[in-house]
Amino acid sequence: MGKKDKKVVQFSWVGQLLDFVIEGAYKIKYLRVVVSDREYWIKLPKELRSSLDPQIVPGSWIEIEGSKEVCKKTGKVKLKAEFVQRATTPGEPGKPVAVPSRSQSKPAKASILVCQKSDCVKRGGRQVCQAIEQELRDRGLEDRVKIKKTGCLKKCKKAPNLVVMPDKTSYSRVSPQEIPQLIEQHYTTSQETGKQDDPNEREMPKMIEMQQRELSYSSGSEQNGRSGK
Image (cartoon, rainbow, N blue to C red; front, side, top):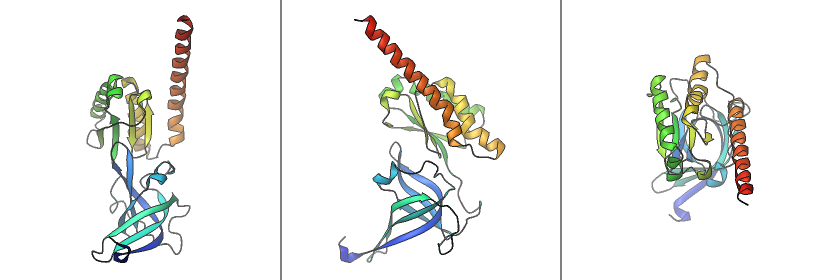
């Protein structure tokens, strides 16, 4: 399509994020955003994916600036984000924003992405997946939380790996024994209390545990190295 066949304009919106559209193993391709009671799919370019604020989750109000490309022949519209951040004040004057009711907006899809590539499988990935299935059944969550077996999550040396959606929390070196606590933190505690967990509070015990594992692993490697001399 040549330049004469399309019209490109800039947009600056404030809207509410409905969900992420995931492609491949774990790549956010689009943002589903509601602006003035209308849903838009806005492409998230590669350079914005790594810098996206982790506190931006489904339900968040966000400010988006980008380009809107309209095909003059077909009328097809393509939206591409160039800047994304959390909105400080939803419904800011002058912005085309409408707050959708709970009945209008679709609930965020809950899922657990489990890597099934060779390194993760060899290090217990299949057992972790089975433990998740069992825990979801035991808690009656199998209809609300889906397990998605994925390709490589790019952390082979820290296998097995998984990602909890919709809040995009990633875990490495996961053991089947840790699954009950993980499900409790992400899908049970917040539902029972009606409050959303603080990601920082939730991650801290896991981060400390992972650091202890890495330190013990490094220490063991050094001792083996010395004994082999």
